[in-house]
Structure formats: C-alpha cells, structure tokens
Image (cartoon, rainbow, N blue to C red; front, side, top):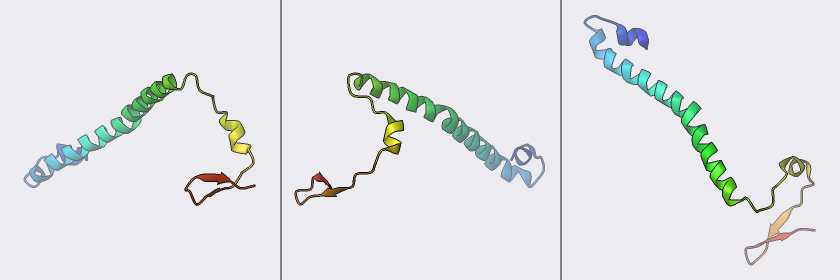
Length: 83
C-alpha cells in the first residue's frame, strides 16, 4: 500500500487516497488490538478484583481436573444436581 500511496502519475491520483485510508485503518486496528484492548481488559479486571476482595478465590488449576458432575434443569427452571 505504501507504494500505491507514494506513486505519482496520471492514474495514481485516484488510488493515492484509498491507499492512505487503508494504511491508516491497518495501523489503527493494530494499535487498538495490541494496546488498547489489553489495557482496558487489565483495568476492568482490577476493578472487578476490588469488588471481589472478600469473596472466595477459585483455584482454576483444581477445577480443570475436578470430576464432572452433570446437572439437570428441573420443572421450576432451576438447576438440580444429578446424583
């Protein structure tokens, strides 16, 4: 796209603007994906962590290897444990 954006000539004038728009879109989406989204996620996680300060901490390593307990939804719409 840089070559198209910097090209000079009679037919290149039509494509120069479009090339600059594509370059700007790619750079802004790269910046948004690699910087803005992780920063916002980190900020929101710290806010949620402050609200959950006194709650029980879940050990996800143990939960990954725990036995599966199937559950069924009863007639009242609530989940009941299947034993």
